Amino acid sequence: MTAETIQSENSEAQKTNRNLAIGVGVLGFGAFALFYILFFAVMITRPGLLFQLMPVPSITDAALSDGNKTFLLVQKLDMSNVNPREKKPPETKHFLTVLEGTEPGVSQEIPAYEQALGANGRLVFLNKGSYRTFDGVRWAEERSDRIGRDPRGILTPDGLYVLSSFETGPRLSLIGPGKTGDVPLPSEYLTAEKKDRCPCSRLAWYQGRLCLFWTADDSIAWAVFNGSTWSSAAASPYSGGYEVIADDRSLYFFHREGEGPDRSLSYYLFTSDAWSGPVRLQVPGVFTSWDVFIQQGKLKLYTQHITSQALHTIEKENLVDPVRLKAPFDPASMLGNMALIMAGSLVLTVLAVFGFSALINKFKQRMWTEHGAEYEFASLFRRFLATSIDNLLLLVPSAIVIALLFSDFEAIPGNPLRFMCMMFFAMALFFVGGYLYHSLLEGLYGQTLGKKLCGIRVLKADFTPCGLSAGFLRNLLRIVDAFFYYLVAAISLAGTMKWQRLGDLVAETVVVREKKRETIVKSISLTEE
Image (cartoon, rainbow, N blue to C red; front, side, top):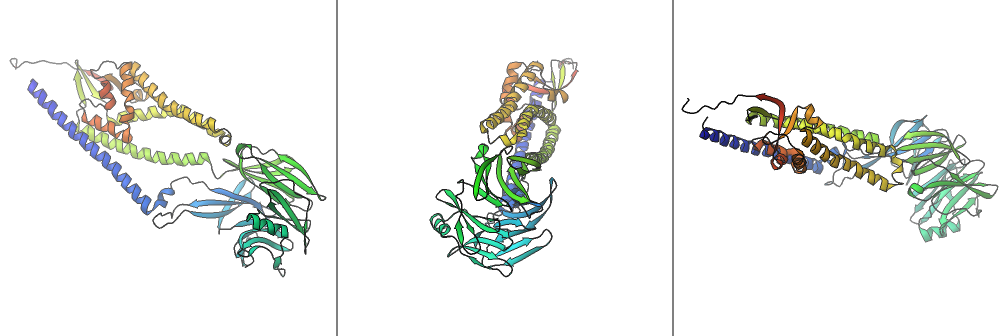
């Protein structure tokens, strides 16, 4: 074969490679453009469809009891109808779930409410101008103009007492069969309400009397209604966030201390016209919210943690009979949903790489003869498969670090620096460890484990062993090759004679199949022909 013929064939091959690289680039960037056009079109017209793919957690708003059973009130965001153009925000849906043993039962969707309470075998949901009751089987709704804004209520043998706000000021009303009417409020409360506009009121029913608590001058004040007049009671022992509940014997005044990981719960006990306490409760873990209620004569504490929920019975300073539930925010479930989304993306990526690899294989010369040996360049798909295997192997140590981190997820708020350091370590382990893994193994042995399993090897451009310097250099450019999901590498591979990505061009390396056949190179002169 003459030099002119060889030069002509090389020129034709380079032209084919150039056109092939242009074709791969146009197809690749066209696919990206189409994807993003469709993505933003859906985001603008029907963003709710995309939000439905996101694992949006539900939130347990409160726990309460009708005296016999425990109920959970759950909020969930419905993203399906979100539309910024039509100014449609996410819709909050409310659900009522009865706790059956240690597992939540079937949930039922309920209308929005402002406050929920329970006693005497039923639940009551208050709204401005109405209230709904649930006896465990049937629902009933009543209209009442005695319920204003921000209602707070309590069920008593006399009926339903509701404290709410109107244009003329706060109003306390009794709603019951044959007993509906307004109850005058204590003058001290009215003074505090005018001064503060947010007296943080609580109602309790203690030994046949209505008790009203409110905040005043950074302290807690309260008064007792005997059916006709209010009387001041013994000074309350604490100021701050609080809840008050009562049974036939005692009045319990719960309050929280501290914030974040240092948050704790204590309660005072009011009996015989005197306060005693505080009794400090050793709540396990870091809790984000809490509720107290009485069920079947026992004092119950519900706590919501980041990854779990718990229901305890309070016996003096001890929490007994724990019932643990999954929290609405479940990292394992959310990671599982994300893994499914990633798996779907991976399937699409594999199909795309397979298609590009088939296109390149059809038009590009794969064999190369050097020093009497014939080499076959590794295809795009085979190289992609080897890289995927290596990345999976590199993910194992990082996944172990992240698994250890999430195994004690509730401790994260107490030590955010530890969380950040471990996440940084996991990322460094993957990226820095990956760079060293590829560079050292390819430089020393010409193969990573993924390449060995796929039957390919890294050599220098003259088909001699790779060497450490070339191994480190070719992998340094992997960052650039990885742009657009390795589309840059695919374009470079399609446009070069020796199937080289940018890292290979800079380091002067190639990737070939392990299979090598010795050939006899015959030199025949023109005179011999």
